[in-house]
Image (tube, rainbow, N blue to C red; front, side, top):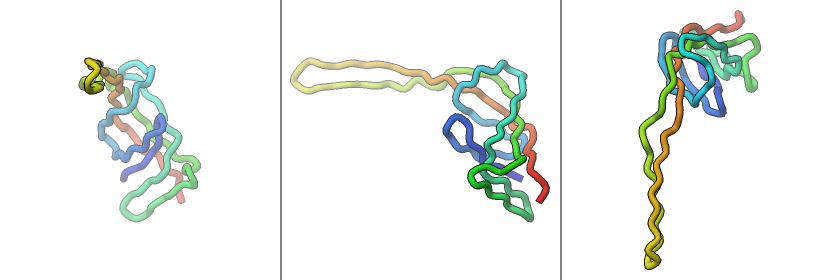
Length: 106
């Protein structure tokens, strides 16, 4: 069984037990939270598609921790003007583990 859900403007496909990197959430490590915006749930026999969300469906996730992603370098350059700028950025993310996918009975 897998589900497609929306979190912070991004869509993710996940199965029970899988781990994902999602945008930073202010939730401590070891805490659980629910994701109510489930767009699709599929198991072996049935497929439930929401319009846009499935009523009564949710994904239960546990936070494994937060960290910063790899550095991305931004380099600006304009020719013949001696203009050069280098800037780095590290995006915060949260690592989550999908504990359970709850689908309504059809």
